[in-house]
Image 1 (cartoon, rainbow, N blue to C red):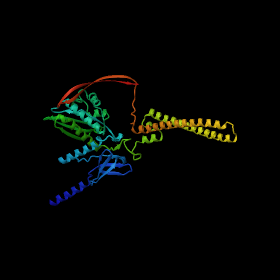
Image 2: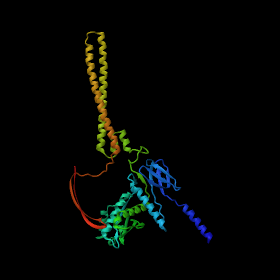
Image 3: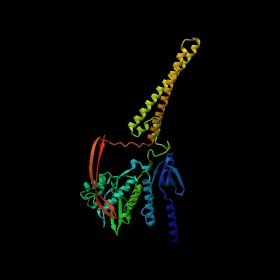
Image 4: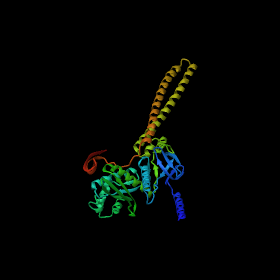
Length: 422
């Protein structure tokens, strides 16, 4: 029996030694791949921790992509293992939430629907609504999903599932998966909220729309109504972090967030505009500005070229006129000396005027070029949208539930506005 325990312990050590403590993968721009590490994204650097606890710091300018994977202990048996799972999921979620420069590959993002939760014991439907709104807002901030608008989801639930489906999912006449499929949601979140002794118990389940299988479930407890925003945010982090276990997605630095060319400090549009004024603006889809900068630069250069040619012509005329003064020595009293003096003074005045115009023109061209570079660096990409001309007036009302002094109250908010596009 004693030997059996020893053998079991040795097998346990071998198995645990072979498990990767960290599972993040960071790829550098030079092709180097760092596997089985833990990454922490800071403002300008990424701190990498290896399995031997060795830490390295990399500038974000040398990083191509980061694949963050939480280390999830399947079926945790102890409280310590459960807390470690939570910690890992929150770490992954915050890696996305706390940075605006890193994002998932767009083609890797999935459509995610937050369905209405069922109101359990001691909970009013209005309370559930505000909790689900908190969850949706927090999930949007993780930038992990294309979170579908709540109004769209509610409308689909009522249309597909029948009246009252969005208020009480148990009344839906069709499976929730059918509603999620109609929304083109790859995965969706549904759940229940219960209340006991003023504590809120939020339980949510993430399901795959097309396989109808449960990916994972999470639970969070809010000690009071006042802590619901924080508890909902924490719950959303656990959901977002847990989702990474099912996605083959990497974080990449947004275009223009780097800081060197090539291993890139400046956006490439700045390089384009440095070579051809206006080209960077054209690449950012600011076509009018590109025409303005490119056109004025060309006109300015042409004007400078013309004035330079004019200055050289006047200079040659001046040299020729000076030669006439020497002929006056050979042919005295010919008047050539007087003519040469008058003509020389006139040409000198013209050359000074032309030189002044050249200086002003060069300064204007320099300022346009400098603005061109400044604009290429700081201007954001133009978002293409269809703009219609005309006058539009709208008035809308929306019923919402707000938390006031630990009490949920229903309010109707009226919004009015106008738009004049021309």
